[in-house]
Length: 349
Image (cartoon, rainbow, N blue to C red; front, side, top):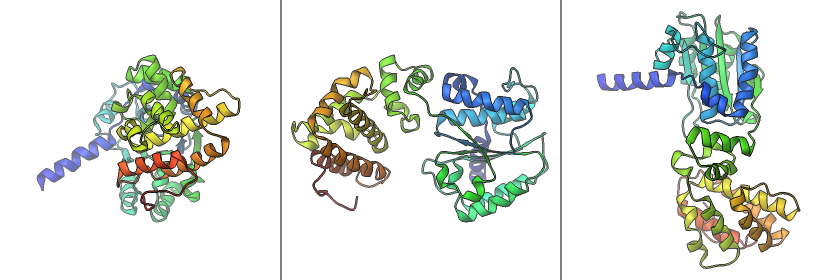
């Protein structure tokens, strides 16, 4: 019992821990723009009590939310950033600041249960330690109808000096009643050049590898070990597949090393480049991929490529399915050889 209690205490502290990351924010131009807007609102005392940050989730969004939270409770900000030295900053860094209530996202993006909201409401009415109480809800679209209705009353009648900081990626999935009570700040989409600069600065990638990682156009899909993956091999495998070189299942070996969500994203990005090339537009791919994209564009007609898109979209939708990952990728390879034929493996995948 004592060991379980200690484990829960450590987990709770980790969830409340708030880091200050000015360098990450400054290094990600699309996040820096949002920070500039937030800095103006905070300095003018006009930050809405319910703030909804809408954009891609991942390490850069987490840095933005946590640094903003630290700024709000910091007792002596320096040049608009948390000082890192006051008691509030030190406690927030350790996860022991009592006025932080956080519902963190999890890898499976599971729904926020009503019991979690009830605990949140109970904690929100405790006596404040500092000058502001922070309620942080990550990926707030995870609220279901019951938990959303439970949170609604707290949003409408919050305790004094309460600040809601919420993130959302798919705003269309957020309950309308919740959305109407939060003021949304939309983070702009990063450009490929900005993502490449960020990969170089944040992860130390070489310029060419950074440009390839940026082509995925979604940092949240890439884990540390996948940043230096052989993306050219993944692309060449598709060229060989479309050219009919060898057994389809053998050709796609590089695809099996990638998580399916990242593979789906990469292939869809290549498909879009092929579509632009066939329409006479710039393909907007890194130089290392230009030859492969040109070969793909010449390999089949427009009708074929339209059918390919539908198969890729279906693969992307099924990418999170936990069963038979290799079989799913092999099915995709067979689909892409001739996407107009019925699926030839288990249709239940």
